[in-house]
Length: 245
Image 1: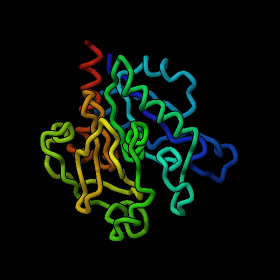
Image 2: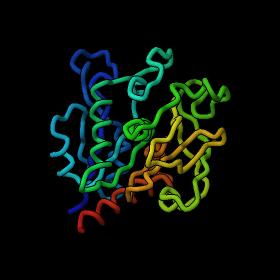
Image 3: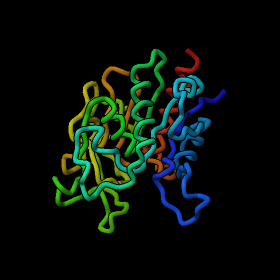
Image 4: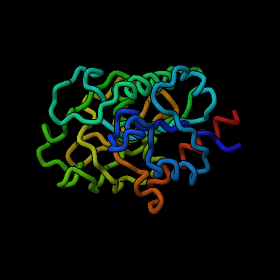
């Protein structure tokens, strides 16, 4: 049987809509699902608020923590009044922080890929902190377009890292749209890639076999870029290897 990959969804309060029927809803861009399917995995959507996360994790072989809104700065001792904060969903924060801690401390380890917000959640869950707004410390912000949307830039990959093994490259061109970033790396994690401005673009766990976070959005170009698709391929392949052990 193919590996089953739990994929977190946006929170019920994270995306606004004009329709009252869809005012509170869980959703997920299809690009994440497409990338997991191309890799040979079966998507298992995991919305916030699941009361029995242990049962959910027992049913899957790997985890994908997706992008989304900002993590509440109260979770890492940050500025909860920062004017650029947006898309905070406390139910999602609670669920995903718990999810990461369970994955990191579970007797049955699950390979985990965390994307954008997901990488930030991993760092906060394990004791790290974030910059509430990159432009506060890097006025020449290369991580978002002039309109606040998507842009592309390159990242330098740490040699001999898990990330380097996965993407098989020392420099990668990526899709970026984040206004927050890892500030202090959590104990047990290390930086695995950096941007030209020195911001951390990837983290990985030094004591667990396959826990990787990337600040960019590989799902946006994975269909055309084998380097980005490899992140999903390796997640699913690692899940398959552990499934048969």
